[in-house]
Image (cartoon, rainbow, N blue to C red):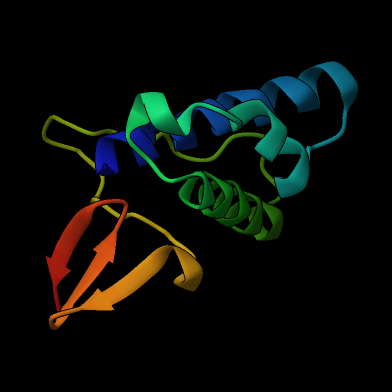
Length: 107
């Protein structure tokens, strides 16, 4: 799932830099949600996870006022840490584990 999150992050990074170059405005997280709609099934991610990635990207971009943030790599020597953001409504607590999108993780 972390590979899918990194893919969405990189897509939003390219989308944001292109929007600034062409229109001079950076899209909000709500605007970016429209571009990632329906891709969750192909990437194996929950739709709320995609929304949280776009919100996190918009939050991280704002204080630095940059057109493009660092790219997230899924493999290689300089790979990014795996992270999967989700809303509390998308996760469930079952048998001492957190279950999200059909996967259970020990806590």
